[in-house]
Amino acid sequence: MTKNYNVGIIGGGVSGVVIALEFAKYGIDSILFEQEKSVVNGPPFCHLHAGGNLYPDISDEQCKILMKQSIEMGRLFPQSIDKRPTFISVPKSEKYNIEQIINRLDTLVEYYKILIDKDPLNEILGTPEDYYKSYTKKDLITLAEQPTVKFPKTSDEWIINALKFIDYNKLKTPVILVQEYGWNLFRLAAQAQLAIEKTDKCNLKTNTTVTNIKDVRHLNLDYNWQIYTGDTVYGVNYLVNSSGFKTMELDASLRLNTKRLIEFKAAYISKWHPIPGLIPELIFHGERGTPHGMAQLTPYCDDFYQIHGMTMDITLFKEGLIQSKSNKTYPVFNADINRKLYLGWEEDDINTRTKNAIEFISEFMPAFKTATVGGPPLFGAQQIHGDDPSLRVGEVSFPYKSYARSEIIKASSALTVSNQILNKIEEEGIIPLIHNKTKYNVLLDSISKTEIDQMAFQFAIERGYPGALSRLIIENE
Image (cartoon, rainbow, N blue to C red; front, side, top):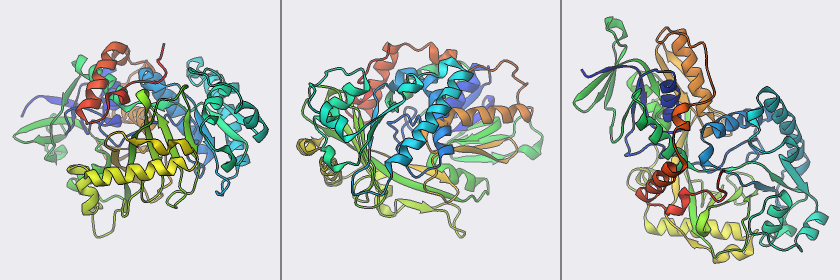
């Protein structure tokens, strides 16, 4: 037996690293196990869902939760936030009602004001009055005649640039520009790993597979769980399962059978010719899973663009959404998806799906037809607790004493889950009560932009992606 720890965290994704960092800032020692050589490997994220406007079908309540959680995470990792807005539209062929979207946005503006009243530092999305702006057909005709702005600052300037490429005659009006920002996973991963490496309160074990976990609570030892990694055993008082889509596998080893969905998705990297001015992220809403599913174009540096197309031949996959069954503890993907997850993609599949994605975007941006394959896909699988595939707000559950299961769906839920687990280990007496809790994390604040730049670039290259994907298109001050 090696050193014992207060907390053992299985999985170094967004949830795992945020839990480790939040515990470390309060002096709670932990050990964090990650199979890969660095943290936050997937599933990928690219968007700070500060309002949930990419999801017209979810409830207003989920949208408000996503806004609050996104603001909290944006404050924690400011050097990973790309402060460019998002263009929201509905093609004329689709069912969504623009007025309903605007009514929701008005609700979010009022909620944003409440968050700012509670804490003025929550105003990270601009002023509430500028959270969104809508544009009529007449507005679009007028703005389309205006010259390109290389580095847009106002909503109108962002729209002007977008209109140089968008066929807005295919869209319902008004269209909307909203302050939902980009979120760079390479930069978050870099800042998190650098901070963990600087603290003596978290032992980060990368390239490490947990092979077994034993419940020894009944043995009256000075720890509750044994974590096995090869020939090494670690004792921990509190166990956190943050294994992402493999969460159910760990549950199975503890004889827990839970109802879960797992979904595999991918986004595609394209390269386009240089354009004279920055454009916002572009969303063209459509019904998920149909040939007209949502199209999403996310700009990166050096003319790289990430594409989501919520259709079965782009982002979604045959048998890509699977559910636990009564005769199985956890669901298993088919051979094609498992090959992608564990062995990598075949070149033909990369080219075919990326070209499908480019063609999909070019329906609304004809000039984008000239884009080419820019790199391998960003991909991964995520769990969704319960049986509702439209759920977007994650949570945490506590199936056993001294055991927590992180069940985040969006990266923005990580801090909320961390705080819930912190409260639970206080309640169970694993640690003394913390009387002065703070939203700041001095460990993260100690990491410089230069350090983040260097490690984020390194992570992108090591994972096979263009280094440009590690940079922000709008440099933070």
